[in-house]
Structure formats: C-alpha cells, structure tokens
Length: 394
Image (tube, rainbow, N blue to C red; front, top):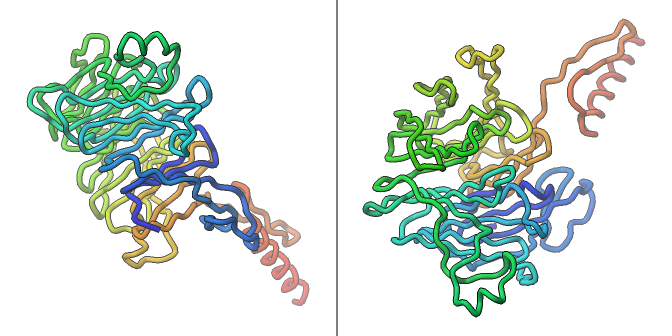
C-alpha cells in the first residue's frame, strides 16, 4: 500500500471509508471471523473486520484536502468535496468515483486567481448543501468562499432549457458569498452556536466569527492556534484549534482566551473531536505511533474547572515505518477509529473503557463496564475458573 495523506470514514455509510494522497481510494468494510478467508483485494483491519478496495480515482491532481458531505443528496447520492493546490474545488459522489454516471453530481468551483485550498467544511442540518472553502491569500481577493452546490451553473440558454434538476455540469461556477479579503484563511468551519455565522482562522493570528448575512465581523480572538479548526459535535459553543505542539480549546461564550490548553510532545498534524462521545478529542503528532486522546470533563457548566485525562490508541509496532500518519473517528460506532501508518497500513481500533472487577462472597468474578469481545470474555472466564479451582484445592 502507498503512503496515505489522510483517511476518512464516510459519515453517511457505516461501511465506507476513503484514503487520499496522490489519488483517492474507496474501501468497503465487513465483519469477518479471524479464520475466514478474505475476498480478492481484501485485507484485515482488525481481528473482526476486513476491508476491500472498491475503486481508485486518479482524476484529481495535487489534492490538498477532502471532505465528506454530512448528509446525502436528495436522490441518496453520497457527496464529497476535493480541494486542490490550484484553488479548484470539485464536488463529486461515490457513484462518480466508481464510474457510474447515472447519478452525476460533478461540480467544479474555480477562484479568480489560483491558490491552494487549505480546508473544506460542509454545513450540517437543513443547510447541508453549503460548502465552505478556505484558501491562501492572493492579492486583495477574498480567501473564504461559500458555495451552494444546489445552484445551477451558468451555461448557454439551450443547455439551461434541458436542465431541470441538479445534474451534471462541467461549467464554471462562482461562489455564493465571499469573505476575508487580502488575507490567508488557514481553516474555517460553520458555527454550531449561531447558524448564520462562520468561524475562520486567518493571517496566522486571528480566529474570526463572521456573520454570513452582512459579512461583518462579529468577534475576533488573537491566537497563533489557527490550524485544524473543528467544532465539538456535542456542544454548540466548544471548538478547538492548534499551533505547532499546543491544542487550544475555546468556548464561544467567553472567547477572550482558550479555556483549556493541551501541550503535546511533537508538532501536531491532525485533530478531531469524537462524533460519539462528548468532550473526547483525538490528537495526532508527527512521527508518533499512537493517537493521543483527551477526555475533557467539566464540573457542571464551568469550563475553567475542566479536568483532562489522557489515553492513546497505539499501533502494534513502534518502528518509523509504523508511525501513524492519519486517523479518523467512525461516525456511529462508539469509540472506534481508523488509523493509517506511514507505509499505508490501515488498522481499526476499538477503545476500551476501564473495567471494574469485584469478587463475590462465593469467589465469583464480577465486572462492570462496557461489553467485552469474545477474547476478553474468555480471559475473564478462565481467570474465574482458575481462581475457583485454586480455592477448592486449599
């Protein structure tokens, strides 16, 4: 397997994920037993599941970022956006990647002047058709562009008469709104607190909250943590960003300073909130074999009294070739994430909670916690039987 720049679970399909680097590869997973024969092009990602390559797309060159749409299209198509080094943003679907043109959703957005696309973010809820692109600076041009993927492109009138819905188009399309002129936008997200607001990290030193309705600046925070901006899906006011080897967690209700600062041993390359667990933040650093997991627990509503516990999801090998280069949370499976090594090896991890063990008065072993897999259950049963046998022999 080749080097994977990133790996991402599909939020609208439990068994689909993609990897991207010099190309985009689409995979499908399924449950298997440890002794089951794997299908062609299949490989094991954990003891109980395997993945098979569905397709490889080499259509897009110099890929800088990829983002899944948080909900399917009206006809059920699963959309994703691809940002490129020349500023192009292409919206496509799983069907398009697999060569099926019956559900064609290709859109291509091009800025006035070519520059790198730094990040992409889809809106959620009823406005899931909105796509936000953060670009490098180019003169006085806006660098934060908002696209509506349901808008029909400008095309000759005879073509417009034949187009009655959101179908195929290879015509250039412009942005629905533009912000942040004369500055670079490192990352940007839609605000979960205010539906009409965007949050942009700009110019190496600002986090800006922008009102979409009039384009005016609502508030601004001074910080060097302008990378990897992401909102906690379980909180409308909490978000995180990073710089070098420090994570900043922000509360939009008191945004003057970060409410939590988390140092890491090495420079950070990726950061994601867990979609299934509140306040659970995964952070990946350069040349590390594990993903650091921060559990932010708050005393009531007082964020300044937050306590942080740190765990990790590690690979089985600590050699440089097994350094973790990317990770992605599963959208619905609790505490499940997928990692990619520096050599492209993919592994699925199920994070286990701490289990409380107790002895009954008859010598039985009792555990409380989440469900155990078969191997862990057998270990506990064997331990219980051995203890009972030892007690009977005394």
